[in-house]
Amino acid sequence: MPTLTWPTKQFPEPISAHLKTEAFLYPYGTGDFSDELKNRLIWGDNLRVMAALLPEMEGKIDLIYTDPPFFSNQRYPARVGRGEDSRQPEKWELASGYQDKWKTLDDYLDMLYPRLALMYRLLSPTGTLYLHLDWHANSYARVLLDEIFGYEQLNNEIIWTYHGPSPIRSAFNRKHDTILFYTKGKDYTFNVNDVRIPYADNTVNTFKSSKKAGFGKKPNLEQGKVPEDWWYFPVVARLHSQRTGYPTQKPEGLLERIIRASSKPGDVVADFFAGSGTTATVAARLGRRFIVSDTQWRAIHTMRSRFVQNAALLKGEKPQPLRMAFQREEKIPEQVPQSCEDAVELKGDKLTLGANLSPTLDYWEVDPDWQGDVFHSVVQSSRPRRSGEIATELELPFVGKRVCVRLMNVRGEQMQEVLCS
Image 1 (cartoon, rainbow, N blue to C red):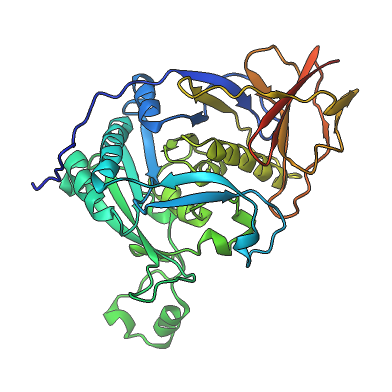
Image 2: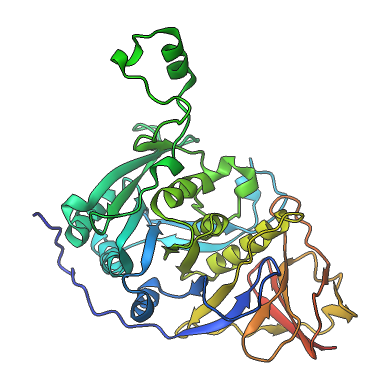
């Protein structure tokens, strides 16, 4: 079988990261406050992170969706301002998001190849990988996946199509991405009835009007059909309620179809280029467990805030408890919180935010019984994506001897204050 070669191609034995648990997050403020690692949000180099997971998780992850850099050689800033005119991006308040810049294609492949190989090892025997790229490098990635998984394990080359403006005037507008769907073995999960979609109205009307339609083969019109291998979902720029401000965010509908098709409730879903956290958000909503990681602090902060915002939208409902461990690769410098004396006031079981902080605050959370080591975030508030108004008062479910408050401003700087009850 043909293989892809380049001068620096190799698979070095990855150096395993040492993962330190920084916090446990209970976005719904419910459930038993245990330290069981059911869901993980990991900040670190995903090559080292995946190597660290091997002793525990090799051959146990049911589905991996991965959306790595595309070899676009662009820088992607994150939008951190609120209430700005979406039609005037030149006026947006921006912060560093991530870079997709490489000296050569060889450098890019040196990054991608060993990570795909580790994903293969982490997948269960019945596991599935979806690799999301575009025209810049998808053809190279397909040859690499044929080498790692086997040519016969390619199930689909899915085309995601979308609309949007484009500056291109020398070629056709590039408005699709490619998602390569590989399985580790011949036996794998594919929930065909969970992804059916309605037939188009003209198809339904044709079969109603003529007994000869379909050459005598009439489909089950009520059951619907299995989608083709080209999918239309609008980009997040057109989905105002989903926007996080993080660059190249993918729509939830896209991930919902993938997760419904290739996993079952209770399965482990992973995304090691997690970005804005769409994979984890949808997995949690569908009753799957998740492991997500990213090397960018902005991505970690975006994901954490997104869980809190989604929990706020479920008020009045009874969501499933969600426990999430925030872990950090020890190689990454620890963020030392700044002092924020008199930032909050504790009266009984209520915390009130200082008026001078609220205009720049993006997120705050509380451990009602701070023990001085791992932070147990039981109550949180995140600045809503649309209204821009963050809650200035939080009610605690209980109050211990010491209450620890952590705050994050729009620049990603962390502050902390410890209060005695």
